[in-house]
Amino acid sequence: MTWITATINMCVKGGIFMIPLGLVALGSIILIIERMLFLRQNRIDGDRFHFELRAALKENDVEAKTKGFIGRIIEECLLRIKAGERDVDDATEKVILSEMTAMEKSRGWLVTFYQVAPLLGILGTVWGLIVAFMVIEKTAATDPRMLAGGIYQALITTVGGLLIAIPVLIFVEHLRKNTNYLLSLLDIYLAEIRDWVRQQEKTEAKRG
Image (tube, rainbow, N blue to C red; front, side, top):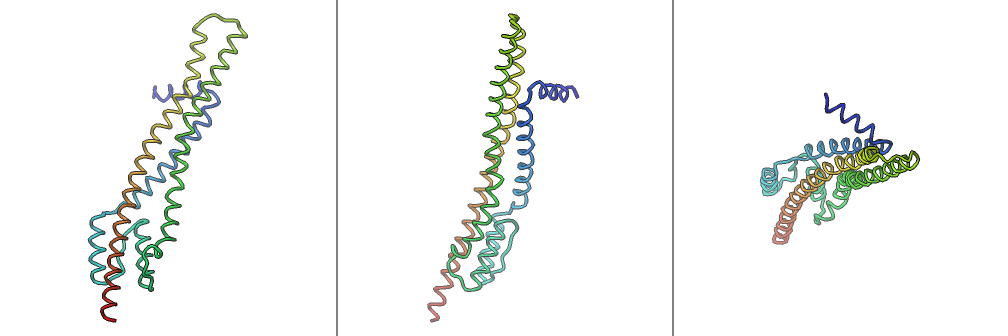
């Protein structure tokens, strides 16, 4: 438990600016957990669903389903096509906008947190240095240990800000890559549906 005690002592010595840094850290942890659950809920076997979708469309079955936001978009698209819509983009425009808004909401806050955290740390350091120099000026002390002590306490906030920002930045990049992968799968599935719609139109034209 020594490292826990040392961490608590450092946070206390960091001063008032450790409070907003702590709130940023707490908010980041909550949003990271929420986004991890989002990724887990939307994880799909891309190749398997692609095969199932192609097989269903080949049989003119518009009931292909999967979980997550991809499943909701595909389901809405197929329902609209079944109802007579022939433009896949029009069939999915509203639901894609709705899903993308929900996807980007938490990510925007995470980006804000990893940008703000180091700035708060630097601000706390500058403030701490000002206070340290003011104390030295008032006491007319010449002991370099007093200055060193003030500086190391002031630098704690910079370290805290970086310790928050770096993991959040790494997670945001991880989230971006996973989201882009899911969107690329969605593009593939919608392209498959477009091809199926064109084939249906050609078949209907020949019959006509």
